[in-house]
Length: 611
Image (tube, rainbow, N blue to C red; front, side, top):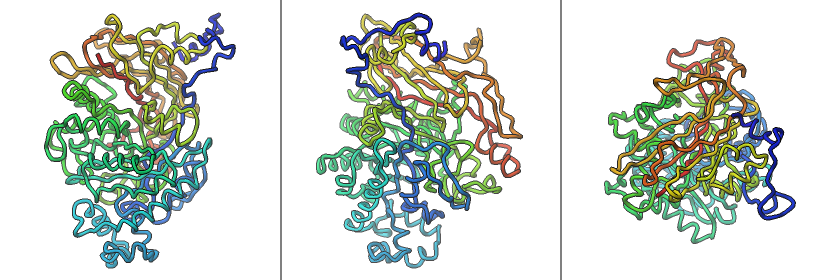
């Protein structure tokens, strides 16, 4: 069944049911979100010490906001760049450590130049010695004596400028500019970073300086600082974990940084302050890993899995299960049984982590991560910032999709808090996902099917309690293609659960798909949708796939006594990868290892079942 059939079932003679409130106007009393908004919660400008060190000396937070809302800017490579469609919201999340420092030092701002840190920079910052500048940035996280932080007054005054810029560019109803920063904790090069995002304006957010990794690299201290902020200002704030795939097993480990097992206090702090996980971004996709999900033919997508952010080899297979969203969600079930609280009960979003102030997630308009990875006829052959992986490995990902009532800080933040959000790898496909115990196929045929979906169940990010009479839950999923993008291949529901012995399991179910394909009788696998990509011309056609898919699926292997989570994954048909577009534009050869095409996708936030 297609989503179009669902929406236009009324043409077949089915009638919408009046609202149970008895109002003549059915929407009266409805209080659910009707708009999907697409944005980026993770972007850096010249205010970030690493971005400035590696060449972003010009593009400011104001430039980033203006670009995101649709204005044209000039990239570092001299090219004009513009989004085909503006974003709905953006968090400029510059690193808290030495925030704005290198730029201010080089314009002789006494606020920075007269600090202890500034005094140490005179030999290499004016000379733009990127290696020593990066060394000071990373060194400040592990050795405050050698690389002292800014005084509190300096940090507050710089932070106030950051917050006021976001306020100035915020345009409620049309474009939302969030105040935020990145807490850049690392341990021996293993990435423990979080983006901190405020619901508030500068009047509250600027009253407390960002908590940085120079203060502590322990997430518990960050969470306590966020609690202190809310207590002091009456504001609201949350944190978003990211880049688990570069943490060498530390991001969501079952021990704290001091080696102790997670306890209930830790679980409560984690659950309270980190409602979201960034499952896809420029440095690799973190939904799952092929060795963790060997039965999932779509698990190996833009995988970065060999090392951490400092190129320390990932030589222990056990590390992976603490890094990828699906396995971490499963680990959360195990912790919940022991502690009574699930520390990893997060929703899923995507974002870019670009460091050139340009939020570009489209394959045909991808401007890289750093200035030296912006489009050129040589970017395949160079290393990101001369220290990371080859530029061809970069991922044109991703976006955060939010079901909100309006385009405002308050509405978007609240949607993130309740996890009614999903990740995309760059596309703007639309997905709805609901769980309940009384959905039927007929529900999708109703003209006002969303009324029914919310009335009879919970949306993505929600919870299902004990099954009535042991009845299996049913899940309603509806997806439509990006209006300016590729058709859909299939919709899948991913289930993770814990059995009576405490063992963790997962399974992927195809629940709706394009065409008249049938699952293989022996393997149960659905045949591929096909591939229309022409590598030579960097093009594809929508002659395969479908514009819309929808289904009601009931778990055929449900056990009412077992904890479980479910989320939807929606796959598009194959399209050219950004590197294929580059090869065509510049007339250069693709690296042999670079994929020629890919299947962009969306991951919804889970729905949890707790007996």
